[in-house]
Amino acid sequence: MKYIISIGTNIGDRKENIENAYKALALVPKIEVIRTSKIYETEPVGYAEQDSFYNSVVEIESTLTPNEILGVCLGIEAGFGRIREFKNGPRILDLDLILAEDNSINTDNLTVPHPRYAERRFVLIPLLELFDDGVAYGIEFSSNLFKIKGQKIKEL
Image 1 (spheres, rainbow, N blue to C red):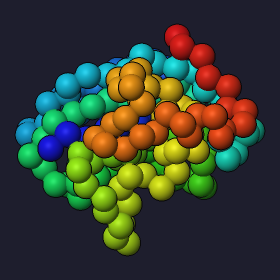
Image 2 (cartoon, helix red, strand yellow):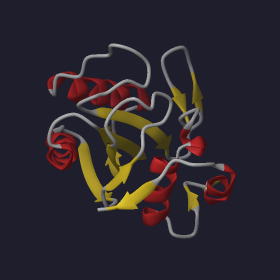
Image 3 (tube, rainbow, N blue to C red):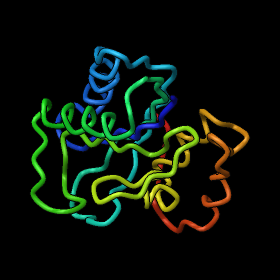
């Protein structure tokens, strides 16, 4: 199954953090990194009193289940020292499972598609880079860009 994971960081060497997240995903057994978007610098969403973020998305293929992929994401974050002090706060690394090919999931610990991906320019722009027709796994996402106000983003 194919998955889309969003990666974000605003602590430390942000570019290196994202590149290390790509490498960490590639080292996980049963995961193949298929392609990555460019890295973008974005303004924070939700809590503005923090440094700008670097964001990217990565497409992977895996025989792991969506819940197992979530566990991988949380494990990589923890391995890089992520501490969750408060919602939308600064973070060394944030990996979010955005889409799971042909799957819609809504459980207590996992919702796919990610419940706020369509409100986040920092997810949609890199996603559009990978799926230039604006459709990923049968989900049309590009029209959501026109509904978003603000959220400055620039390609590095």
